[in-house]
Length: 191
Image (cartoon, rainbow, N blue to C red; front, side, top):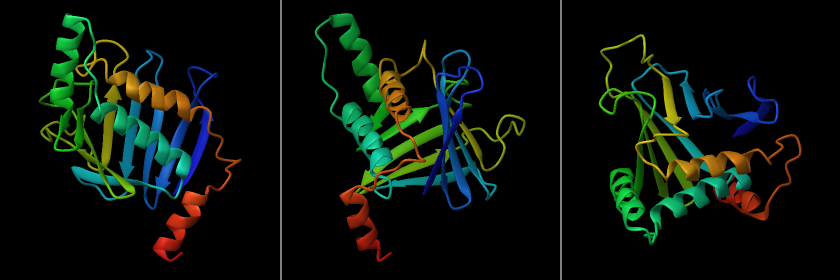
């Protein structure tokens, strides 16, 4: 797994991050409207792709773990109306230990889908095109997941991904201190 960063084209106080796994790449960035995007590009043209986050990079893995735990261990809030909205959003977002996010970019029955599951020391990200009748919008092997800053169908859980992105801003891939967990993970893999 290789991580690179470059200054955001619209806001030079932010960085865009690209995570590479073989022939696949995941670009995490914020656009000029403040929306967060995960753009997955797989060299294999398909309407379905996976991307794996492992302890190979402990910092990145810990960000995914924190976000996953925050969403799965959702706590009810005290204000009744806000609690009701959060319960509906949480119900739509989680199922059997999986997080399923329908991109905020398009209508729910046309948009790309991201599913996040955890097993052992791995986060599996699954990307899928839901409606392939519109090849202009859905190119095989390329997936576009939007976490809207406003009017997200999963509010307030979009804030969890924004918090993750803000924490990622602190990461400098050119200076990466190896963690003990990364060494142990490499040993288990036999590398």
